[in-house]
Length: 457
Ligand code: F0G
Image (cartoon, rainbow, N blue to C red; front, side, top):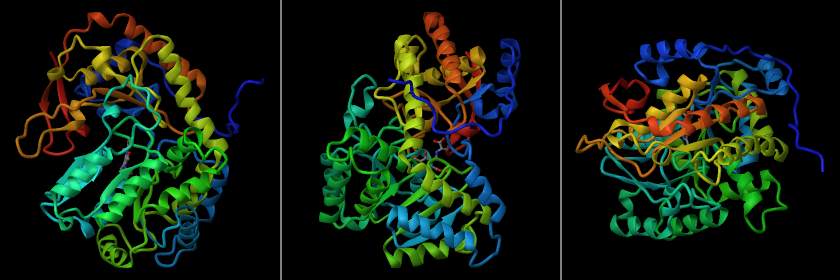
């Protein structure tokens, strides 16, 4: 059998800069040990996020030239609207400038103070937008998600009993909707099965509670369903996507992931009343309803991106590149979350550096070390990201302390993956020397991870 090769060739390249360990030490001190504060020029391989960092295709770039920048009724908007309808099946559509803007608009219409919003490990902006409205996000993810060594094909699944308990404990007026994140970023880019989606949908119908998707990585989720779920192996990605969305009432999406664009997002839904309410907030926060904070050219590129990301050949090269890195790390003995996520590999810092106390942000310490050793920028998904409890103001210690290595779409080659794996092997081989972590010297009251400052202990 012939080896696998990417279903694309490279048409344009961007230089990236190598640096020395001493230079990087200087830069990270200046950044107060917060990787968000680094200048990207000083990063060799940037795995901070897969959000807005992918490469567009020639066909997407072609759309950039024919974008219609009309304030109202832009043809690029109409093009996007048609594709959104075709791919999601939802009737109504509102563009927004990115995912959290879609959350802001939809949640303004749906959430009141004191409400409960259950889901599967809500992403931090989602949780932020819930808590900002003095409502509570309740995590109903299955327990298997929190043990990185358990192999389970759908670790993003909702525990139906946990969800039903929430429904029983609170009147339905207090639960404006359930949010299902596909794939589940905070649980490690893990997929949700179509069986689970159906069960959640049925339970929601039984209790008369709407179901919305946080669909940032909906195409990768569909790829996993096709690969892992019985009865779906012969369906196309587009068929699976359509079926998944048919079980919900609507969605918010950050188009910067599976939309294959650098900026953008939208809301799509079926309920006319909610659409009308959301429209008011969209105009207030984002812009007129036929652009919602997006350029015409970006809406055109998104229309093409949604079609490309729901093609099997693209998804195979994307998800399998992530798995290629994961497998190299496993071969080196490095503890990573398994099965591998769709958009990222997650290092298990609890197993990697148990010698650093949790109170000293061990996952952050590992992320900083990876930068110093290899010029590679990952991101902490642990105690720093989990932030403080809004009531007690104590640090929240999540079950997992992870470092996420998010792989941008169509951007790096497998040589880069080899380099990343070799850098981590070096760190892993000397891990027992790591004793001290960091203390926080400055932090914001909400979503602290972006601007937090540390000192080395
Ligand atoms: N939902 C999920 C599941 C996400 O992963 C993100 C963003 C958002 C919503 C918010 O979208 O950034 O366009 O406003 N995730 C990025 C990440 C930031 O790095 O995982 P946004």
